[in-house]
Length: 101
Image 1: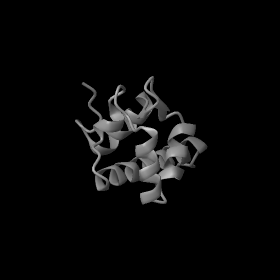
Image 2 (image 1 turned 30 degrees about the horizontal axis):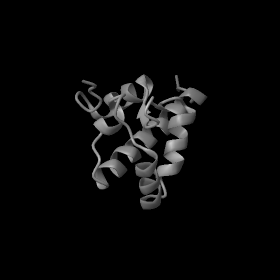
Image 3 (image 1 turned 90 degrees about the vertical axis):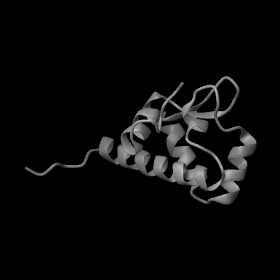
Image 4 (image 1 turned 180 degrees about the vertical axis):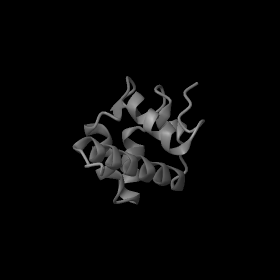
């Protein structure tokens, strides 16, 4: 029996692609995953602007992450991953990738 793709499958694939792009972009520009996985840290608007200027993939991925509720703004107005985003990141990159101290 063949598995028919659902909209949830497409959203998961898109989220995973964006998380993968996000991780690569962060590393290329001197950030670590903990920047977005630790709820009290995050990326401020200046860092987001610099990442958007450095990579044409950044803004579309940020939009997908936010609209799917895999990323949100914390109390310091910094972009961080939600529980969903951290869970997917952990699934993709293994233990330690989304550790929150």
